[in-house]
Image 1: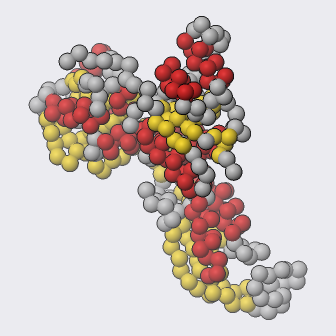
Image 2: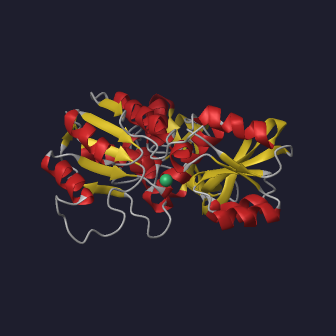
Image 3: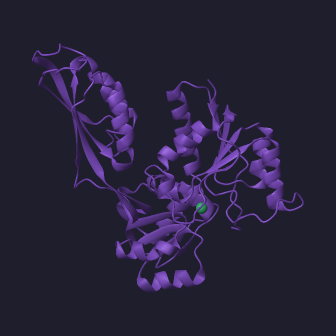
Length: 373
Ligand SMILES: [Zn+2]
């Protein structure tokens, strides 16, 4: 069965949950319809005229991007204007467009994790929390014969994740008893007789937003008519999600060589930096794109330097006065690294689903700025 736009957007929404987007930030399917079959998807940071052309030429069915193609409400769709031309070309070619913006900045493995990893940061934490997700513990009693089936169902529905590890469960064998009463249709045993069964207590953690789905999947996979299970709210851990990341360098380094290294690892056409070139930096905050709105968070969290893009003159002066150094590596160079990560994610999900999907990474996207050396 062919994949559809709806399948791919659902996968993206599972990773970069739309509820994590900042208020007023348009995310999700912007052009097209969910039931359209997809065999080829193009991943890009944004839909420029070049990327739209590439999508048409490559016969992509869907573009998955970071920046919205419709950011401001369009007032008209004229093909003699740049925006209308792009939109009309995409619609005419039947190409759908989906975007994940601040939700993709926030999620584990998204824009800012990729950036922190690229810069080699260690002990990485969220810079500015935007939400806390409560966790629950699910404990279910399952006969040994169906243990694996229930475990898989629970984990595939979103239970059992701790950090980057899936299928985290604990399993204790024991003896379950029950006495089927009149009207019961027991899977094992018979009405009126006390039954003893070898069962396994399977327990795992489930985030709040997956709880209903996990319980439904668990019940569907479980053989019993009446399933014994408990759900406990947990005080800890609470999964903190948020914008930006902060971490430490393996070794402190002077600001200027650090800025050079940033340019190198991000393959940025150029970087600017603010601060004493010889000051040592160890604690680094990162925020892909336009991050100066979070400079205060970086300073409060004890960052020596903030790596971001789009730094304005007066914001730079304020940061310097507060003792925070800056490396401006550009909006594009600090965000573009998420595109291959999105492509890898979609390829993996397609492979897991057993459906063919060709995932292309845009080759015509690029930094609008050029630098004179
Ligand atoms: Zn951006």
